[in-house]
Image (tube, rainbow, N blue to C red; front, side, top):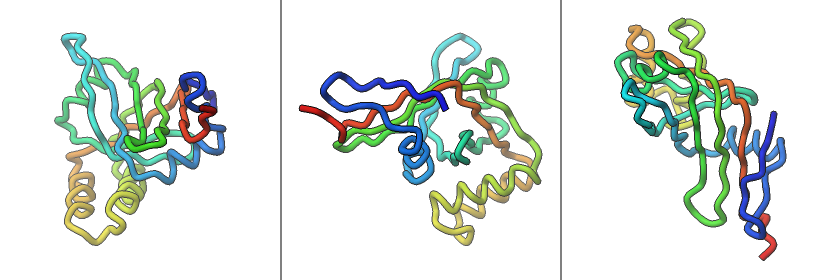
Length: 157
């Protein structure tokens, strides 16, 4: 895991590898994904994500703008950060891989639903699981090239 320190001097420092993995695994924040559309304009998409200790996954519809953008250019930027003090977060760049294999994707969507809804037994979880089972959605796997991290709770001011 390649970690870059992007904290302003005196405001904090980077997270360790263990802290980065913990942050990505245990915080219930939105990931914001940056893609480029067919007009070369940037697009930002908020998504629920699942981190498996190495890669980042999210579900999207087969007709979504983010999926069309990824099909055209599979480089992706991501940012996952706290918006309350002390600021802390992870951003980076990676390669996006599209998976349409329902059997492979089902356990990932189940983990997403457990993380964000707390159960597989609610309307939102059922809606997204059913969408996957009907082949209406896919999983995007992000293979990160680096993680740029900051943790202002480690400030020296």
